[in-house]
Amino acid sequence: MTYSAQLSRNMAAQESLNHGKEHGVIQDLTACTRGLPSTKKTRLESPGDKRSWGGNTDSVPMQQHKRQPELVEGNLPVFVFPTELIFYADDQTTHKQVLTLYNPYEFALKFKVLCTSPNKYAVVDAAGAVKPQCCVDIVIRHKDVRASHFGVIDKFRLQVSEQSQRKALGRKEVIATLLPSAKEQQHKEEEEKRIKEHLAESVFFEQTPCQADVRNSSSGPSLLMVFLGMVCIAALIMPTLGEMESVVPVYLHLSVNQKLVAAYVLGLITMVVLRT
Figure 1 (cartoon, one colour):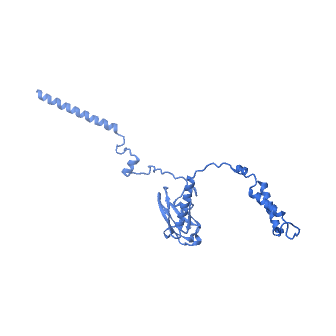
Figure 2 (tube, rainbow, N blue to C red; figure 1 turned 180 degrees about the vertical axis):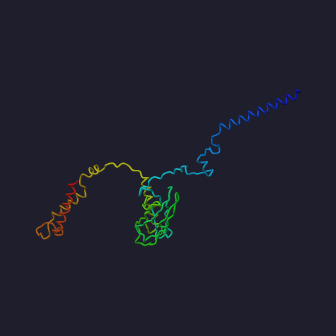
Figure 3 (cartoon, one colour; figure 1 turned 90 degrees about the vertical axis):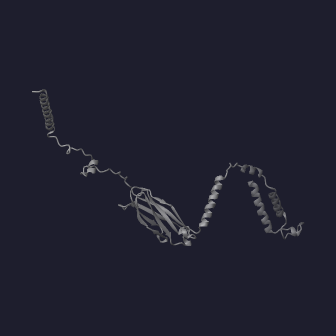
């Protein structure tokens, strides 16, 4: 046997040996993995994978929503602007006012507008709903403008509640007033503003007591009081009309009534002098 033939025979034997070893390794791996589930069947799927692959999502917990606080009747704040409606008789543009109702909450609200004098006003959309975090305009018209209604204060009440409930969760009152003239009201407001500014800018000083000094300076009777007292005394001394035996001339004689007046004045002067 030649050297080349021997080399070819050895190489063939080596290849058959390597092939047998590979076949044995494959058989061993097959025996080891026999009885194990297929990798396709044991694919781990997360809840997100099930949703993406269209699998069954019954076992996936639903997203937990924030629970709203329990709403107590009448305690829900109501946001309305403006809070006061002023109608002017001489200005027709003010006969139509707009109330804006805001809903800053995360749930819808239904509202209702009530009035103490419904015959005097026309309310457009007196009832309706407001979407979450939205607002709605309520138009109010004054349809009975007369002088007898000047200065009368009426009230509007806005009641809000949840759409699924009837109880009022909150309420807000708005004042409505009819005034005769816008210029007159503006003049009054300017006057009040001027008075407030004047009072704010005024400087006040401490008042010193001076009543005692005045009383001390006027402790004695004045000269006028003394003169009137002397005149009254002289009038009382004068003779009365009808007395013939008198040295005093007749034109200086006084009647009884004149002497009574002099006596009354003298009494008043005496009281004033005694008080001082």
